[in-house]
Amino acid sequence: MTHIDVNTDAVVLAGNNTSGTSDDWASWAQQAKNAFSDAAADVKDATVGDAIEAYGSNMSGDLSSLANDVDALGRDTASASNVVTNSDADSTATLNQQGNANAAFASNLHRPI
Image (tube, rainbow, N blue to C red; front, side, top):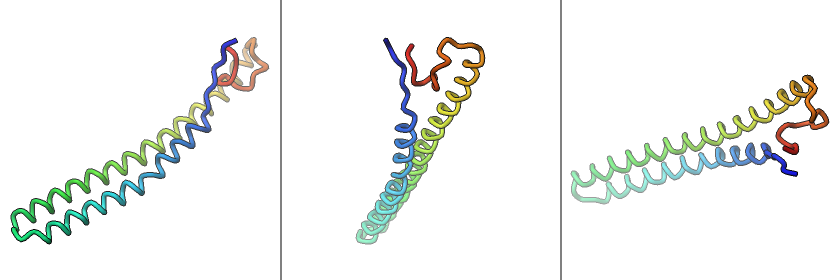
């Protein structure tokens, strides 16, 4: 018999773990900005130094944005998994009330199909 099985707990954990890396991404953004700032200060030519500083600032902004996106991805993944879990409970109750042949199953996401 074929079964459908959705492990929403694993998805929530993965989402939380993904979101948890956003601080590392933000830290990397700050480290990159500092490194380019230090390099710009070491350059003797002001034009080149300004260009390095600008590049570092732009790169840091992009990495900071990436950190925010990673956080949002993780939080949204966990949230979507919670929606699936809650919807499964609601739909199972509704289907069982309608005399579903699979009324003995506590979940529509963990049952034979």
